[in-house]
Image 1 (cartoon, rainbow, N blue to C red):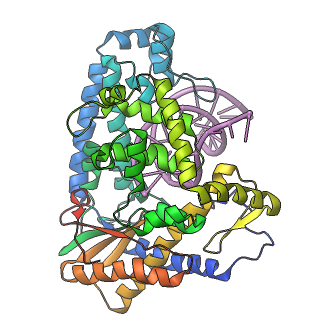
Image 2 (cartoon, protein in one colour):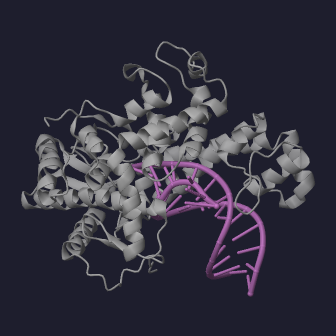
Image 3 (tube, rainbow, N blue to C red):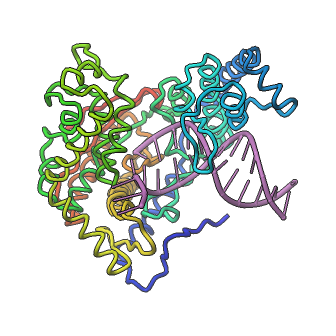
Length: 458
DNA sequence: CACTGGAGCCAC
DNA sequence: AAACGTGGCTCCAGTG
């Protein structure tokens, strides 16, 4: 089946930089080699894990069907009762049993996602959610991988022609969304990705890539300063502002939420109300290093209610805009320029035309070139491995990281060259790369789940 | 029976 | 006026 991009006119008369085309051409060739090489799968383990998950799902199903909630469900739906139907679950919980809906979807249906359901704190629902998590692991990942494995190897397809931002995508199966956040599910799936005999898995990840590219794109002096100084950390500093903590007392988890619920959303066009709402949700889960709860800490600092917190985040947003003042002014100009011309060109030469929203205008010129750094590196690294007859092979790519199956004798040579390409050579390739690049290397001896940081020279 | 869109969840 | 972006995949519900 041929897929086409619907919203972007790539056949426009705007001259396309040949170097942009060449990057995709070379990229397609190297990615086809990556696909052909494939990644080793522990098929026996995958099967074992499937059995475990299948059994647990059966167990949970029978427990769920032994409840009053299920009796009601059967009364309403009779033979059509389907435990897998969230629509039916919504009707039972909110229609029959009288629980209060937490929210509604775009089409007016009651929200029955994990977030909405977990607020109900009903034993049935908690168990239901555990079952759904395992079903997702089973159907999308375990079965998805089993279906595509050929002789113990998986060959996901990496596309360069589908994404509006000229990023990549991946399918059959999608290797770019293998679970990692949930430890239980992550273990079930990732332990099945194993190195070849005598090899280890190595992952080379660009550190803070999108922030660095944002600094290059907006040329905001403070962003550049942050990107150049490895002792500086924008997420830590904004966590400190959002949660009224001294910089040196920002816990890792608090930094994580500041990064994903404030800094990136702000850079891509969100605003303080959304940020405040999203941050506030996690406040009950947060605590300081001395054990003080975040609620307690905020209370001590005069923030008792959500409204006060929202006001505070509004102040932080104002601070953020005045701190990155060239970005703050530049983004308005960027939007105005697009409205005059109807298109824009990425730093890597790719043209984006067609109807774009403000937020897309903020995101696309960052997301695309960030990936192009990775693609350039992958091309150079794969050529290097071939030229010098390495036994090590690149087996995949996840937007800002390269995954490789590296022979034990080649680990340091591989890492040195990968890091050299991803930093020095990249800087030479494009003059708009005005901040240093950082690479985080991880190694896994037995399987992908066990990956841990690998200390390298750079 | 084939197909489509919505909702949900997984990643960066 | 509105309010972070990019994907793939699965299941269900509805349509023809």
